[in-house]
Image (cartoon, rainbow, N blue to C red; front, side, top):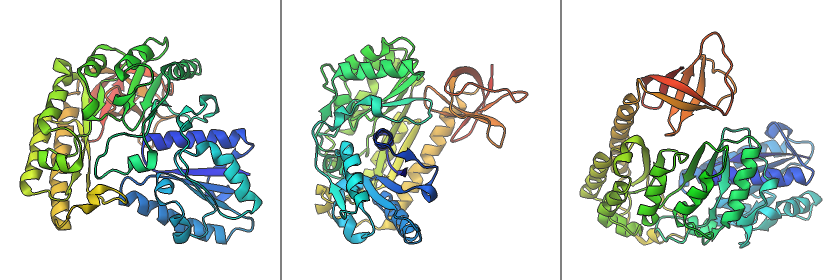
Length: 436
């Protein structure tokens, strides 16, 4: 039987799809090129915002029609954060779903599928298996990408009032450092030159050493070029970690540190555990190396109780830090979060006006940041298998900037490798470059 997995959400979800795919291949299933030729379709879902949930159920509606018109039986499964959050409710809303599997039950997938295929009826497993973070890396079926994803922690012990992660991913579990280092060494032996260390909060890593110490250990692995990580929480961003980031040459000069709001009142309501001034102090830990880094953040706009003054405080932080990039969204009420008890009477039109203003200013700041790169010669990693229809190759800088790379005479470039490029132009979302 052939399977196809559709994935929404963060890098952790992408990596979970790699784990599920590896399990299925090792169990005798084979990947399908698309839904039309698949006997099994799994939706690996996100539930961090309501929009992500709508996308999943829209896709389920499309699959309902495809499944009804199939001569042979199609197994439809929902996995990931939405499955963990909604559990049996998904069966009620989409009765044609055959399988539901939570975030911590990945290793149960072959058994669940065997039961679903045998016709025993709907199957579900949303239990929290405390060892799920110890997934055997040799089973993972990795995509043909320029970097490898490596889980170091699962879950989160913070209690942000708007966030479903503690519910969908559980409490923090940490992989032993020795296991992580062994996996990275094996990846380098396979030809990967870049890794991204993953966790809902990588800064809180406690697998036998601190996260800063782990970065130093990973950097000692010969053949590894760049180390990335995602995501950081300001509460756990220490001077020790900042020192590691700016002194280890292999750590890519990119930091994503979500602030969510510039208002101390809203930060308290969010349960973030820091003030805007404390956040700025943590950015200051980077010292004079901050100018060589790309710093991005997250903003939630229109959180319950946000006044004009609160929003102006957010805009003030945006101007003080001058983020190179940010991801901003209107507050999305999520099930089983304490923020639901807060009064939310701000008109949607005001929320959208604020979001537009912030995103417009961020676009200007990003464009300015990109223009400062023009004329520089930097290493970029080739991330496409060939030139696009416009004739350029896709690449990325260490700062995670998109690069449209021009070559002469249809020159072929080595996928996944670093080449030196001169930045010749800039736009709000990309850099233009040529091979040196």
